Length: 165
View 1 (cartoon, rainbow, N blue to C red):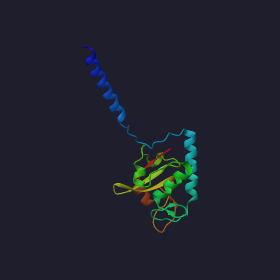
View 2: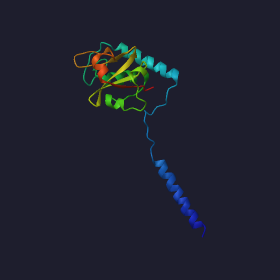
View 3: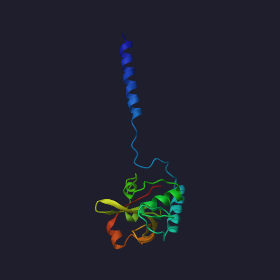
View 4: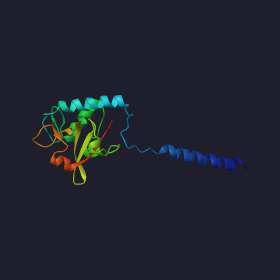
């Protein structure tokens, strides 16, 4: 008689454990190990130098390589993949949705992503290089270039920064 209640409890316990194992934990950041501070600084430095080396590359909508040209998100994804072996989403809005805390302009460090919004949605991304400047692929007919965050349009449309290391 005591065996039947024990079997029911064991069955219920097994069901609870199986249900818990079936759920997937929510991740707010990319699925990769966090870098220690020395490795993060090295990755940020590599990103910075690679981004600067691409200044002057022609803008091309949908472009994602030095040979074909770059649009803003193509430039950022290429630089992070090439310099730091970090895979980022291809579109600026998806990049902005990566986990991590949003940074204001005063908290930015070299290698951080900077996002700009037109209206309520993210429409542009660049890479912060320091001293109030960032590298980006701005528009059709232009080239990858350095601009200042305190420029009129950029200051008014700056949304936030993100650190992905």
